[in-house]
Length: 289
Image (cartoon, rainbow, N blue to C red; front, side, top):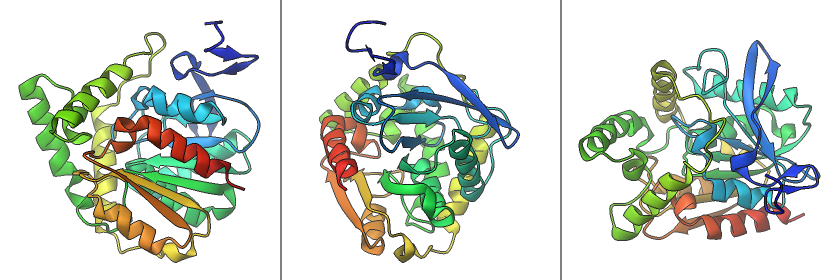
């Protein structure tokens, strides 16, 4: 635990060693982890469908935490957090704001992946003063093309995974090319690096509620993204099946202060497949004044 790669002074620098913490607010005890230097604007990570604390790629978390205070958490009803998972993205966003404010944070950067990116879009619209910069990965806007199909895709790929004795993320997050298969296996292996004090698994009811929320998001009328003034970095793979890649292009067209990175031969988990490039791009984006 005390070698130079893991702890600098009091700052934890490795996600696999970040202690589990809790904070209670709004009737919920939120489970979270934090690491990296305590100066500057913290980066709050918002998780994907069926994602608990242990589903974040440690290479992405550690990479951002090399320069920034990173906070990951389980929203209401997810993992070790208490309460029941809401059935709308808007309610999830309200809970995320409650969590951020419970930590005494006045302004944060947000990295939202997939469903987390949907939550992030609501936060920046309802609480713009809370957000300095936004990173949206593997995600899409309200009413975005194909988003309402996530439930069907998730169920189909779960069956494929069970029949082939593979992790479902291998199908949902990565392409079926040689590169995609290899990247998927490496990603799944990295998620097992933390061996102690792992998070609670997601409950079936929470998963079902999240699917309902994403389905509703896909059926919503498009939001007016032109009001979002914060700098936004959008990233995805070029073959995202879960949230089709054209949604990333659509968001960048509609967000006035945004830029786009698309990774080749990559799916929904493009930022995990290309974690080295993504971390470098994200750090450069966050460092700009």
